[in-house]
Length: 370
Image 1 (cartoon, rainbow, N blue to C red):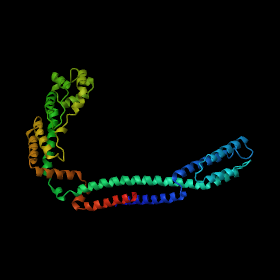
Image 2 (image 1 turned 180 degrees about the horizontal axis):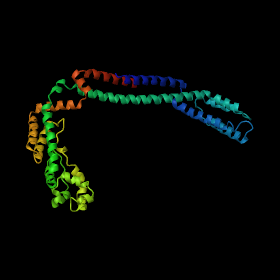
Image 3 (image 1 turned 120 degrees about the vertical axis):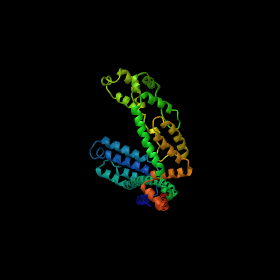
Image 4 (image 1 turned 90 degrees about the vertical axis):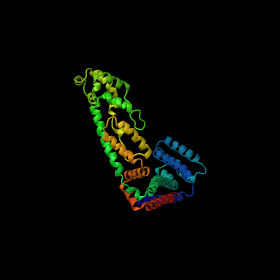
């Protein structure tokens, strides 16, 4: 069990004990009754503070009358079953005089001291309960994290160390080489082929289902097919869009119309990347990979050379052996997804010990919360 879990549990248990101990100092009264008492205590103290100068000595007689009336009414309106109601009666008796001094007000406050002690205890209890609630929430958060950790460790426990020894290079190498080759071919395609031919190619590629390629906007294709600027490559059109109109006038006949027709579709031109034609690592499951490769071979053949297509066929041949491909893919996923600590746990076979430790921490938290 981790030390921070131990610390949290210890703090929670100490606070739990402190809450019980403090609650026992409330003279057997429930907290709601003491809360009502606390409200009465604050009102009494407020009246005594407000009228101390106004109702004493040779001050304003009106202040004396208002104070006596207010304090008498306040005490009389207190619930008969209010805890320590007699302390308020004693406080009123202390100021039940024809002439009041500061000492009379002091005696009135002193009569309320037993109530003040209970109010202080209630405030202490409230503070302890709030602190305990915060620690409890921390423990619950910690518990959720430990449960997630245990579930993850259980998934690691299902991994056989031998699964990590499969030589994934036999699959990773042709995929890496293909990705490099198709990236280079696509870059050349955009920089050397006319925009009209590129968009026509993308229009045909958009009909394939397992490789997502967006078809070109019809207004863009129509404009480029009808104007000589369509003979320029996509990379040049992108560059032209960054020119000022005066500079653009050296390259196209009508700069205003060019920007008006091509500009709204700049996002589409920027989206023409090699990304849809790349193969992810780790690769997808076998059945999806087979169908995706079938589409890629037909699609990439429209802008890449035979060497690139041959790499796709090499990968395709590795998919024919279902068991072998599954082993390679599983090993690739494990090596990619597991960090060094997780790999070490699997290889050292210490996962079960870790599960026991985490489970013990969860149980310790549960016992404390119960």
